[in-house]
Length: 342
Ligand code: G3H
Ligand code: 13P
Ligand code: ZN
Image (cartoon, rainbow, N blue to C red; front, side, top):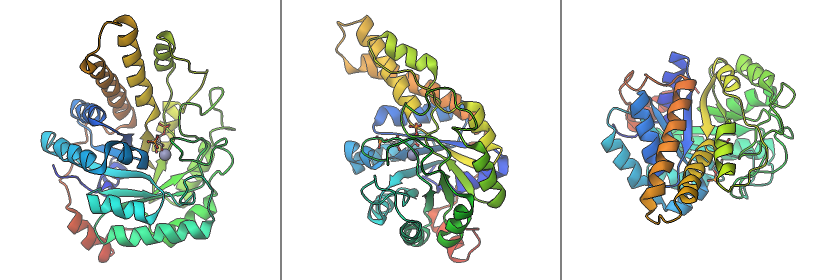
């Protein structure tokens, strides 16, 4: 199946009342893990690459791996998404390369660190919506700022410093016409999200529910949604790692979000933990090994297991065959005719 727009995947998810995991990739093994999990669970797939991932893998390597995935898994509808685009230029370069969806993260300035003004965010996001929709490409925006910092991206601090204001969220969607809206409700990127199991004080599901009440037709996105499972932490620490005690976002909270308009759920850290644990185990138990396949294969299998579990928990399992891909040119026509609601 060709790469499809993320908007189509999210519209279908809204119809079916489920969420779709968006998993980050940097290399071939991670793409393979997602595609195998999608096949195993019959799920649509969102594969996303950060700026750091694009720089690490080089655009063309990454894009051609995705084309290989489309060729090898024809039954899986999948979108290729730019995660946390820091500027219209980054989003444009992703669209030119063939990404079918982009995130314009105007919640931060283009340095990827400094929280921006509402006006700046509206301006850059609107600019990306215009250029992306003309090509049928989906746009995700962000209002509010997540906590933490990953690979230089993020304002740092706790997730509670810039929680999304529901009234501003409505104004942002009206002024930009985004297809999907990322909101800040107390989560952070990376492994260190909460120092104990989150409560309503630290993970603001009430804000999410209020935003959904005010924007019932907008696809909401939960970033920083790794659950940081204790068993994955334990494997790393058992085999020489040094993770500090930490808590992630419980899956039941994500499921509550999905019942309240969340259609895209961003997960990267859980897969990083799973792969690192698997690699540490092999190298610890069999220090004589030096063939990268001896640890990359267990790492890939460990990631597949996490992704398949999340696909099942988010409800996307079983939905790969529900629909036929709408070509990007047709999506562009629909945006121009305003038959896609924005
Ligand atoms: O947004 C954060 C994702 O986990 C991507 O992280 O920028 O280190 O590739 P990265
Ligand atoms: P995690 O660090 O919780 O996996 O979040 C990933 C993310 O939000 C990518 O944009
Ligand atoms: Zn994110």
